[in-house]
Length: 310
Image 1: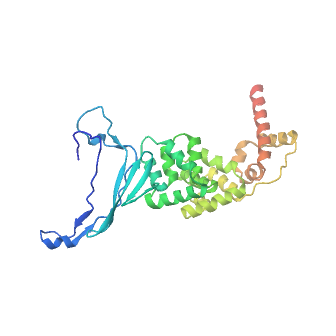
Image 2: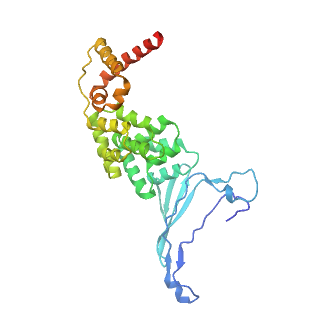
């Protein structure tokens, strides 16, 4: 379809009734039916540039200002309308006129399909809904549009921090980490930085809940999914972290103990820790986070001194 010149107002009339039988018989009118195909359309910035033949300086983008609805069948029914009155959508139904908000799930879809992304409208939804409502929106979105809010946000938002904050407002921490891990493992090249960030910074009890969320979403536990990956040291150590509880108490009480532990790493060699699972568990998995921070500081200090000496 081509349009020679874009009009100021654009009206689409959709054929909603069809004849079920061919032929010109007058009785075919009784065999017609209503076409109930669901139609998606953007609320803002419907771009028709590729359909306009003439070159002009006018914008070929349109915002929706009204919709006429039909309820019923081919032989009876009722018409209502939605119209944009300043910034409010109004429902007109005979003598009844009332304010009508767009379904938030549909509004979110209209935001996602527009390019560029309208951050003001997106943040308006986020700030006007509770955590519970946003999780319902995410569930409904997947059912209705066969896509996840998580995937939509990852494809549309490039800034890492903004992406994380927006996604976190639709999912709880555990579910979000489960989705990030699945994406890090399954999409193209493995994102080891994202994987290490979660495995290294979350406590053991937290990872156990992430494992449960992972199974709810993908039908397989995180542990079983890791076992399906090609075996290598990286996967082995992730399994160690997932299955071995981290100590809740700090065994390193002072700088000397931290220095001794760091010296032990240097003495045995990092390569040894890369091949010996039990050594790896003893130092990196079982120790508390605070212990590891102190050991890491001493290790870096020793490495710097070593380089200066050389």
